[in-house]
Length: 232
Image 1 (cartoon, rainbow, N blue to C red):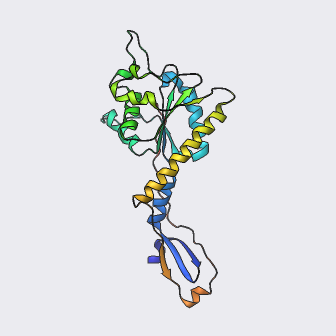
Image 2: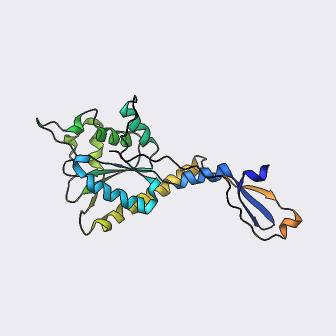
Image 3: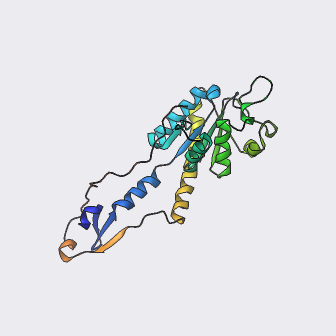
């Protein structure tokens, strides 16, 4: 029956309003942001974990993704990373003093085509995903001449310095304010693209007009987005 497919039902101004289950599921998916943290393990492992915990506390455990390089067997890891970032609302790039990944001989890992950190930032820039560099403590942004051609624009993005001590939360509050602004823009874009579900309106009968407002709980679970396992 049609009524079993309804998720919510309420009464207002002599009319019965209801929202189909698929529309609620779409809203739930749109309501959960997807924030990806890119970092180099040998550079800022502990700091990235602190940022991750703060983001999760603000937006929920299902909203923050770290360690996206858990590559399934038989899959090109470059494609896997690109697919993971394609759905991101924002990418936070943790830049510490060893972010370039300096190696003996003078060549840095960031200049290697197969470097996962390079691929993550390249993908974010290429897809125009809002990208926020977070500087660990007094770290400076890398200079453009230190970066491969595909990452040179990264050197000119306004970065957010975040203290590693007592001012950590104060500094990260500013990052959260920027993320909030980004998510607001993403929501507006989703509406403009027709992704905002509509509410179906049905005329009420005389008996229903006398009824008190009623809300019925969903009988089917709302689909939740997949979460990436923390393996990095």
